[in-house]
Length: 317
Image 1 (cartoon, rainbow, N blue to C red):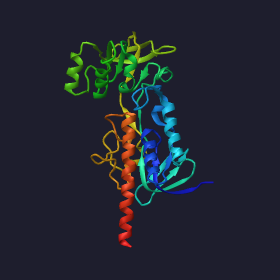
Image 2 (image 1 turned 45 degrees about the vertical axis):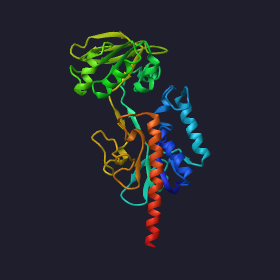
Image 3 (image 1 turned 180 degrees about the vertical axis):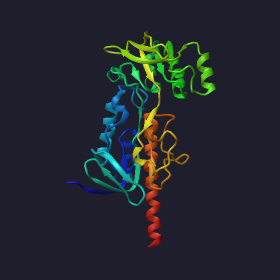
Image 4 (image 1 turned 60 degrees about the vertical axis):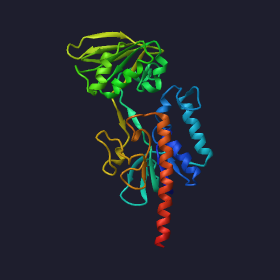
């Protein structure tokens, strides 16, 4: 039987941003409800070693998310295994509906639905993710010290990933399907001048090869269709991310790529009482630690918003 739940804070999403928001909201006695979504724990649940989380020399992504979830449970956060399928932000309190039929009525909402990397869609790609294939050089570049890596893409993200990887890899090959890059000229100049970088134009990654880990990529010439095999230890896919913001289109301000817009130095969206944290609003850093920091900010801002609302009601009375 479907339930109707009433709460002060509804958190949508359960990655580092969502879990951290829940911790701070619970410690503020706001009794938050966290709806976990389709991928409890977010993108870190499909990563392997995490070596840039403060206080952990090395920890598996799923283990880190499990520890954060346990902390939420310890603080009394109501964790719900459900997926929000629609939400009405046009009235207060806000009303959201879950895939299981439950209704969530909230005074404030913290959106932490994250973003997903775009992948190439190759048959063996998913099998080799975390085994040589990655979408985050900052996260995984360290593991490719002294090795040859391939970066796919032609925008600023791809160029910046390639340049970052030169700090570790012995050789970096950028593969782009066109004959020119979309990245800004400053980044392009840095890339072309770097002695460790090669660029392959008019080519696509048509396949990936490897059993226990990536061993090579198959490149297809965009003009002739000819294929060749390039030995590689790592493949970094940098063709963009898609924020999970479909629920909020037409209700909250977004940029051209669909990322939620927030006030400067804030997680406040265009609608009072609605906050956004993590990759759903951050296209620049996309790190677990920055997502967690924004989750903290969102919970503190929600607490402040609720306090001001309660004060206003008391004055009106």
